[in-house]
Image (tube, rainbow, N blue to C red; front, side):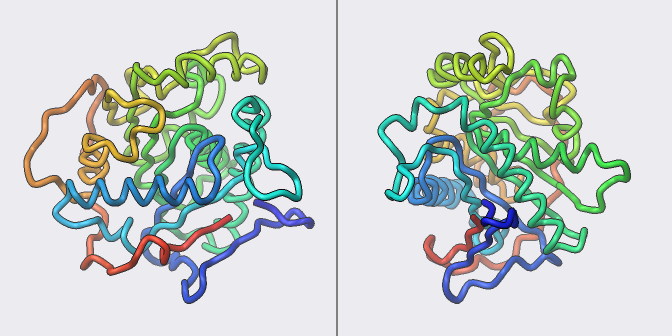
Length: 288
């Protein structure tokens, strides 16, 4: 996410304007071992799922969302795409997630003039990027003037002990007005390879993941929803789509029962919902 001079690199597609920092905006953060094309495909599927469940696709997603590409996979150097061994490099991608958060923080500070309303929707190790970003603002000597109304964490590849033992990122977890955690005990990636990778990275001994347990069960997450998803199943999951539509103020036509939510439930602030913008997925804006 940075150029040779250490500055964040920002790209927009042709005919796509830069974010309007005077309006609420949303950053979409993909996970580990995901190429740009795969990230676009996944979030396009999520938008389609939300559209099917909501009365309208919330305008925050339809016209004010930006996909953030970060180097979460092992590339072949000058060759395009990821290497065959990329899935085995998880431990070395954790610093990449931290660097991506720092670059995104620098971009937001430079472009927003300290005044913005930013929602974050993240998956897997992208949740680490989101929480590192939030923590960088939460630990400032003077409170940030930025507003973070909502963070959505799907299959969060972040150790639970960071929060349970007040080790890391817990201040950032408390910064958003509403935090929605979608987790699954059937996530074989988070119950297996994640724990080994975190141990190799020196972050605990076989720690449990937020995205596999929903923990901590109280105090940090305003809403916790248990799902039956495998690691990448959230993007097509109707229950996930329903929950995201709900926290964005675009409720599904029929009320659905809460599933596995043991934490305190807060009423989310309704974000502006203007007329649905007619954009194709490839016309959405991206930051890298």
